[in-house]
Structures are given as structure tokens and as C-alpha cells.
Length: 232
Image (cartoon, rainbow, N blue to C red; front, side, top):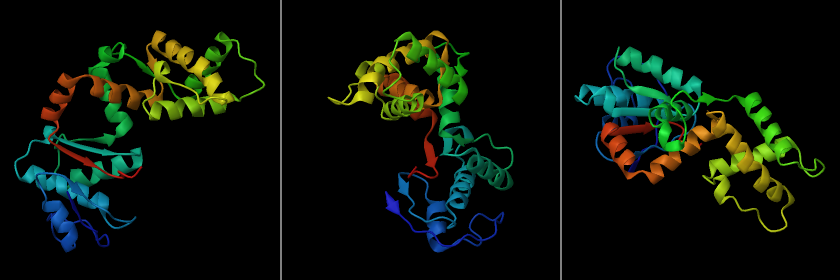
């Protein structure tokens, strides 16, 4: 793809290219194929994303073919408000990675061994479940804290390491404990038809990896994918 450094942000205007720098215009007008934008904070990345979506819509591309992802609810809300001013009422899917994955998982829950009405556990629910898993495997509590186990399980999930594939490094005390607790923790979640925040990403990544049919279906559905804060 191309790279384009962006200039400073200027007030939003309804004419899509008015007040944009040349580099921003180039990014907004880009339609087909990959595009990478490298830019620092406050340089108008979010603005370019929303203007580009509006431009895609103006080119006749269907709102349902466009997917915009970002990391925080705050950023997603800001993008939604900006897009609403530029292209009112267009049903573009615009949200966080976690929210998008939660929605996909509702649709394809069975592929992850879940029912569609699965529950998303918040941090305290997940901690309670982890506590039950620790009790179930009868661990000696002297060598770890629940927080350290939670962090290790979170790391594993973010690296798409399932309980079946988790292998501690030789001599790693915490790793050896995680190898016992992680499978039990995951089993308890599945039994409760529940997921933690990390599962939202892991389950979706795994079902996409393992299902060529699903990949093809989503590939056909989302033709234009825009990611804000890609570095995170």
C-alpha cells in the first residue's frame, strides 16, 4: 500500500475535501486496495477515516460493505458523530474491535462451542471464575497471586494460545501453575456459556482461522475495512 503523512487537523466541513491537506485528500480519495497512514497524535487520522468513509459512500459503495474499527468506545463514538454529520443515517458498522467481535460471535457462536445468548463476563465475574478454577485444581497458594495468573492467561489468549496448546517454559513456576488453572478456567467459562473480554478476540480469531467458509463470507460482506489506531 501507500503511506501518507498527515498534516494538522482543521475544523470539520461538509465538503469532504475542504480544508484538508494534500496528503489527507490523497488518503480520503483512495478507494481500492490497501492504504497505510502513518501519522502522529492530533494530525487528523480520525478525520481522514470518517471523510474517507463518506467519500466511499458518495462513490456508490453500500454502507453495509464498509467496516470501521477502533480501540476505544470514546474513539468509536467520536467517529460515529463525525460520520453522522457527513453522511446522515448511513448504517456503516463503526465500533471497537471487542464490540465487533461480540457481534460476530453472536452470529457464529456455535463455531466456538457457545450458544448465541452467551454472557460477556466483566472483570469481577472473570475473577470469580478464576477463583473457582484455582480452588478446583487445589493449588498451593504460596507461589502466585490470582492477578499474576489472570495476566498470564490474558497473555496466552491474546497470542491465540488455547488451553490445549499452552506449554509452560521449563522451570517456570507460574507457567506450570497456569498450565493447570487455564484449562479449568476455560472449561468453567464454556459450561456457563460465558466469555471474558480476551475470549471475544480469541474465539473470533480462531473461528476465522479454522473456517474458510466463514472467511469467504465475511470477505464478501466487508469489502472496505478501515482501522484506526492500528498500532495498538
